[in-house]
Image 1 (tube, rainbow, N blue to C red):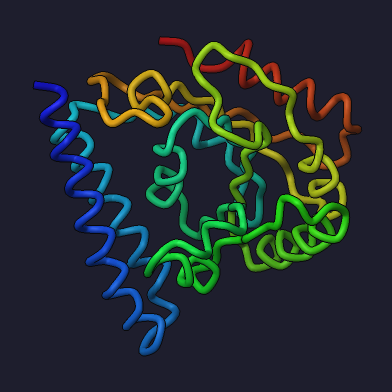
Image 2 (image 1 turned 90 degrees about the vertical axis):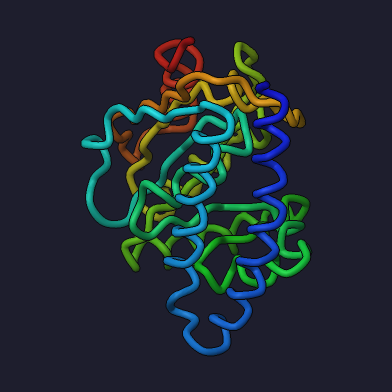
Length: 232
């Protein structure tokens, strides 16, 4: 039964993403300012179908810890779910994404016009400088920037060394860093079609000062992700 629901959900995602992408192409020409709200509406629909087809609900704790204006969300990353949820929870989300996503059919060319931030992960120091400038501009515009310091999806219970780039970004932009933990991978496993019914939990922690040094910032994020985070 759960496999059937998962297959129906994936079918919906494929068909609706193509349809939404075609509509968004027109929006990009006629009303580019509507691209992000349109994408947010599609994300809300997708998560509604996740609940209907797969029995997965979402509980968020600590949203009161998000300061107003520009901010960096340092989010734990276990699942593709994490790339959708913040479109539904934030007013002006800007995901930091890998450059390769711009080559996706139809929607790839719309991501940056919709306010997302692309980075060349093989670009070294020059790419980091470019990323800092984009994050600074997004923060000045009052956007919420979502960064995955783990660098990739990590299975529940596993730990990885966090990427230190977030420390340089925070110190260069002065934006507060808000740690976010999740257990999304328990119900939407990496590279798996079949979903497990249950409740995805998201915990938003109080912000960390941008002035923290590298060791302190990374230690605080690791504690939020792997020790104080979400279980079950």
